[in-house]
Length: 347
Image 1: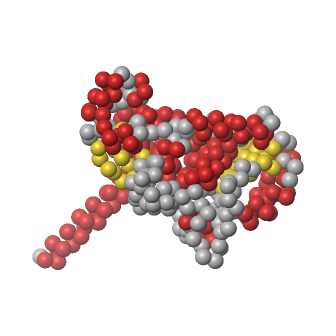
Image 2: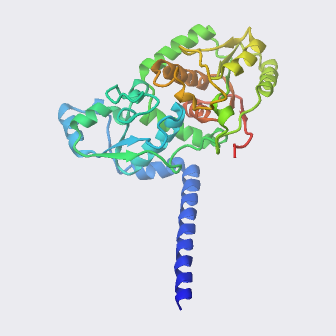
Image 3: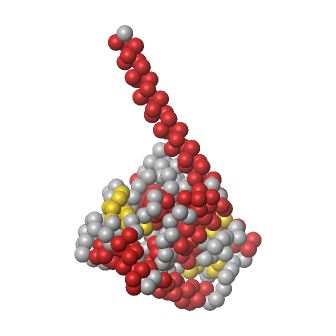
């Protein structure tokens, strides 16, 4: 009898575990294939308004009555910026669906963007507006109903392995980001000025993004395998012969990749270089964001974000898969031709 009882308990545990897995898989599939319907049906019962559109009395009332979620990614404080971006898209989505106004916090915990200085301005708000134009500082000062919630999990965010092939997903996340995580106007104005200088008003531009350094040295599990530079050079030459681009905008953090790629397209190549030349030690294999030249370097981060924005505005795109590539597909209004290197993932 005791053996049977133990068998029944184990069976229930296994069934419960399998049911949870099936539920998660179903929800991921459902959300990935029904973005707009799923979101609209859930969010329509909440009626949050842009803080700038409210009267003084309404502003005061909004701080008293709205629920605010200050969301923090505590599990990977030194992950790449567009890893944060993709993760936060999902978390903003998740907590909007639960009736909160989500506020992204990169200030109150040590991370690669505040360099441990929690008295520094919220790094997120140097580049992006918060949902409904609230700010972290104003929420901390005036809001009555605040929860600090962790940002994580795969369920509500873009799939950075598959987003490139799903136009419905790209459209949804593009519109979502524009509404709830918009880039600041001054950043966009700077990008537009830079593009005029780089491309002389031309729109006939091929964007090329390659990931190197820690991606190549660490080969972390579940991260996308990167293509050989020589293969990319060959493919770009074929595309250039076919479409006769005026310029090729090239973006990578890896100096070794630059040395191989740039001389092949010297007449057409355009870059937006950061404020430092990154000396990455391939033997130590540290995360790139822990590099002493990058860690907490706001100007470097700003340059990286502007690189991604410029890539998102190119006519055609060639890219390896990574968080930055997923980010530029969220930001784009669409590409004419794309080449994505789908080589599997590191195991």
